[in-house]
Length: 295
Image (cartoon, rainbow, N blue to C red):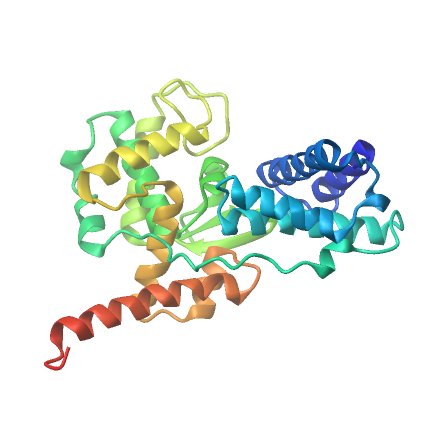
């Protein structure tokens, strides 16, 4: 595929669609991987020469190489978006991806941590004394009490905290702002953290910083979350996103409206939020199995 077409598409995603750098990198990797496959397998490099049979061969090659159906479908989604752009720009006359049947993939339930385990993380004895411990505890509380994404957490500014309205302004995907409420426990933790932070020399405006006063980075947060989740749970996956899943699942299990959860999470549509209803159904099945005399 023509490299300049790919670059134009990536610029479109960045400047017009306002996609995150991480998402754009994923699109770029998928398209370049497909372009390499075309060149190596069919000696084809022009988008107008690509046929749906070539794309299907790529899909088969990916599946045979051990790539999951879920991951293959994500790559196909990148390719479909690319062709929509090419049609819009009148760079091609037809879309070969329309003739494809995506491979079936089983639905994975979001991994979450039980409430009892999360309650253990409120124990101050798990955290070190001093600034590092206070900050690490706040990271866990922010992720669990607000359901924000990792990137949203890292980019929080002190000015995003509104103590008078007990709320936090979050800049989400595609620069879309949303307001999430701040519970009393989280409010107290933020205030205490800011008192400790006053002794840290920092030139950044971000709320959360390292002990050197620098902005946090993803691996830093991952390490903290994994360490403390290891202390309270045996779930296989331990990441900031698991705490986001936990936030949504606990809200739903305790009677929150699905549309309200959608707004809190910053989802663009309800279908992305409905995946959490499956966790609730599974929980009810387990309760029924344990309690019903006919089970």
